Amino acid sequence: MFDGLWRYRGFILSMIKNEFRAKFVRSKLGGLWMILNPLSQVAIYALVLSNVLSAKLPGISNRYAYAVYLMAGLLSWTLFSEIVGRFLNLFVDQGNLMKKVSFPRITLPIVVVGSCLINNILLFFSILFALVVLNFDIGLNVFWILPLTLLVVTFSLGIGMLCAVINVFVRDVAQVIPVLLQIWFWLTPIVYPVNIIPKKYHDVMAMNPVAPLVGAYQDVIVHGKSVDIESLLPVLMLSITLVIFSFYIFRRASSEMVDVL
Image 1 (cartoon, rainbow, N blue to C red):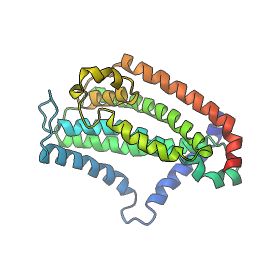
Image 2: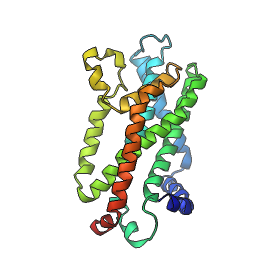
Image 3: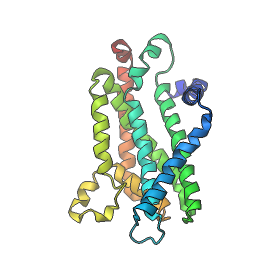
Image 4: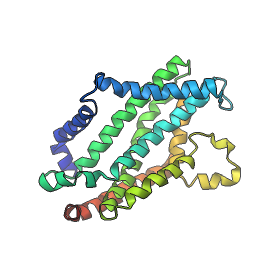
């Protein structure tokens, strides 16, 4: 599979480029929307949450701290949910292509990951721009976002690939997962600080593999802390296990998927 990815690297880049080109083919501003969309999203959080609602984060004097806290959490969650969400119908939507054209099937998930990464990078730079405008301190620990992004991608890839393969044979998966993602979102401390949760529920919260990822993003961006690597080790092991297992299932089911599609 890895050899196929390398040989078809041009195909992967071309697919990602064509996907973005199709989004803005009849747009006056074209690719400028790739920057304006995340900027507007960040502006809403900053203005509405901090100015209108006067939401504040305990322990931080900056009036925009809660907005930045929310943006940091959404930066990680958006990448995770977008990858998983787009994977659900990946093979179903590309069924005709898989039947008519001979190419490594593994390139399709990589195209989705590449596209989602570009969106997330643009959102990240929009947040950095907002931090500068809001006079929020940015330390060198912000570079921890790079390995954290890689970990989120790995975790999302494992879950997304597994769901995509199962959805080919059981189409109910595409209906169930979005509902579960909504529940998962509210069980993750993104819109609320973790310290408002009663201590008796902290052990239950610890079972949420996305929670330490979101917390790491918030520590780095909001608090300027370095990442607690030990707290992320279980997520790392789970992510690697999911990726290996999902790719194994994908290879075993690859030929049967084409027949079902």
